[in-house]
Image (cartoon, rainbow, N blue to C red):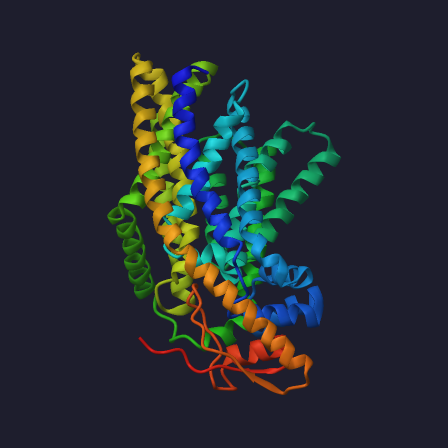
Length: 475
């Protein structure tokens, strides 16, 4: 790698890494909020299988999300400050593994470690940067386990596909590979009603397009592996949709809309999401920087490895697929709630957009490398543009994020004192305790003076003492 390439790589890698480090630092002050007290209580009281069944028949069909809640209850609330570090670290590892295997499968003879690391950083940094409510989708456990978990796990699927394709085609390994594809995707589908329908469409689209362009036939191992994944996603969708608890939860929302109104509301929400992306200079430069950086990597890596060049229509098709899949994420929420999806769910369409942006950018770089002779000039231009955009975006996001640090630290310190007071009151034999009103950074519900209000019930059951608080002041 040349000296300038090392400098450019550092300029693209270091700033977003610092921002991700700040996310992890702020996440170390995470505490239980709102719904977490109910899910923790049920997980401790009922155990794994019974808690999954309880939520399945009484509230939602997210069986994997309920299993994650049980796992947290098993580990205890003391594990919560580490979950941001754990999720982001695992996500980066999975992304790096999948990128490396995808490039090897594409024909690259060797892949530089820093290249796969940079693409993984691009994926995570940009997805988080353009997500509108990080407080609820990255820091709050209730949002993380439903909306971030499937993204982290699904990132590993390309690597599993690669391992299956290079494994010897004997019967035992084939059966194990198909079972892994089916079971892994089924597990992912149990986390979120927003992610799972889009995942079904994604598998169906990849298989259908592969069939049409004759990339594989029903006899190919690729078709079998993806077909098993499609079956797993479809079954998980059916399990989630058929949950008796869905009707109970849906009774709290307006009457279901007709199909044309659903499309209209979903489109309005989608356009608003894109508009917010375009109007924010830090979000927009995060996307542009990652795309320029991916194109630079595609150009530079193709130059060194002499891999096959990309076809132009692939680039446009993948880009279009990103916008279509992102729009598809809005439809399930509108159908279920009769309104635009909450902002915490929008990390899922952000993920699909970013993945397709990065793939398109890399393929575009490959295409440039095989169709334009002035590679050095192109490479320098792309790397400089990527560095400028990423540094600008990372600096702006770091400043905004750092401004929230005191809010998270202050809440954690105050809540630790309140938590100790509640436990002391319970251990002293008191029947109830009145705690101060504390608005949390995620904006989720908090106990009031109403004993029938659900946060009061959740907190009271969790602590085994009646918990009351004065209502939060109205804005």
